[in-house]
Length: 116
Image 1 (cartoon, rainbow, N blue to C red):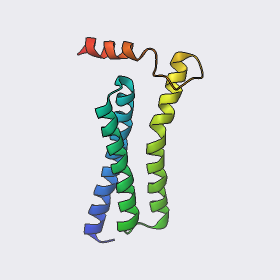
Image 2 (cartoon, rainbow, N blue to C red):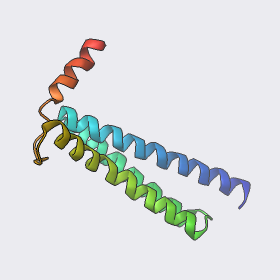
Image 3 (cartoon, one colour):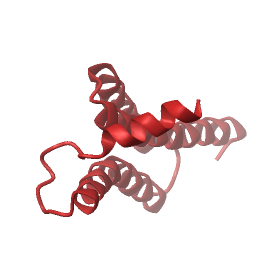
Image 4 (cartoon, rainbow, N blue to C red):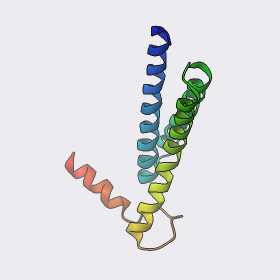
């Protein structure tokens, strides 16, 4: 791998992590506050995550095993926020219906504003 390819690959891998983190954060905040703008930002971050993973697979000189790890990581980044949200919703509601927003989301919102 040439030095230029190494730097380009490292930058894309770093951007992949940032996009995954942004998606997770924006997904949870959008669900917590019910904001359509944050929901759109969450989906945009997810799209960037997919695009970066595809670019890493297609454009970098990484070996197959590393590319498979990138794809698996991207899939995990996309799956963890919804799964975690459903689990936390059920946990705090005490039931099995995860289709409604969390009952106590307004309390978290109030605590956040009191601290600010």
